[in-house]
Length: 447
Image (tube, one colour):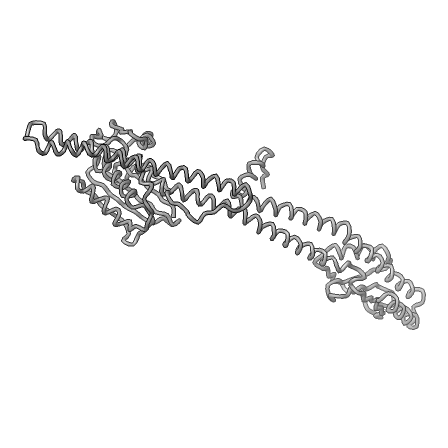
């Protein structure tokens, strides 16, 4: 396995660090606690548990060595009875001689190797004869056997004589305390992160033109200060939008009044040579005013509601068909989404009208995304737009005459309005080459 160079480790770790505030806050709490627990546990086992176990094993080995030496000094049944009685009374050991027996050939070791290694080291230091021991057969005892000329001297010792058996209690209490502390820390961190998430959700909803009346500042003092600042900013922006909407309504009325008078005077005037051209100029002026006002207003005040996507596409297609274009609609019959219908219809109509102006066939389609979002496309079989000019096409008042057959009607706001509407719904619009040969406008909305 190849190791990364030292210069790449910071980048490697950075890519694998949590990206959310919740994940990073949790890591700040969990990582030090885990490091502390590992360090304390290691220090306990290395400095305390192993030391105590070594001393206990050494003491047990000394008692077994005494029994073996006492038997060698006087290998009689009477002496064995004395040794057994003294070992049982003073050392809590069960000692017996198995005449003619030999040590088992198979060694049995426990899951914690340090216990067996410590006991083996102590017995090897104290005993001169071959020995065998088993720490796994009896949960509460240790079986130790020493080879003698007459047979095997078997000693059954309580486990606590060889091992510090209460170590797991310390580890258990350490684990319980760690879990409790981490739970409390996680609970507090989650409450603080939830406050920030609610603030982010409220800001995102306001960006889509939705106002959450139930949002209230809570959490830490700094989070509440940020939430109060957001609320104040939202009120100022909403007040500005309301004032601009009222101004635009007044401007719309003031601009349409002289246009209506001109149209009426033209209708009442006797026919003359330039009347048709003047009517066309009035139509174009009215269309231009509609586009200017739609771009400035942005339909931000419209409430979102559940909309049938096939019906929305059909309505936009019908507006384009009135201009003589051939429009195809492809969408599942049961597809719905929460949108601002008038704003989204204007965006689709602008895209479809733009496609119909530069192609003979237009297709409107929609589909649900696996992630729960929505994808809508408007494509044509026209000349398209060069890829390096896609971003330029979204700029207000950009007409791209050289690439789109001289836009004769409009002021270059169709794509700009469509992008504002898509972004106002939390989505995005992109341009790409269509399978029909022309341009494809792709709108993706989140679920």
